[in-house]
Image (tube, one colour):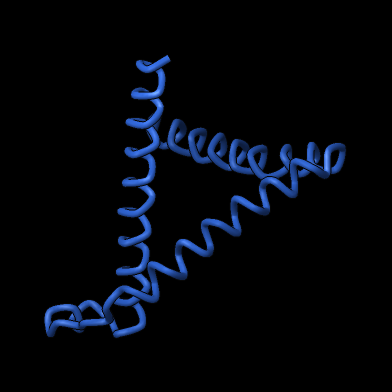
Length: 106
């Protein structure tokens, strides 16, 4: 009984936080439209990276995948998402290494 109450409380807090994470930046964007342009550029860059990743991913479907309802389009989408994650992780690691090396040189 007590666990159920806490779970519902956690669900409510998650909903409140998600709503705040969506609504508060929109309120801030109204007062500073330049920030909205920067966010749009970031979302656009992620979209370009995903489209490139999706284009180079394969759409193979093994017989065991069909048991779980996976078709070629879902396989290509998942492959594109994984390639995108690998690319973004590599970019992040390269950025971290570059930053640390440039700090040592200065």
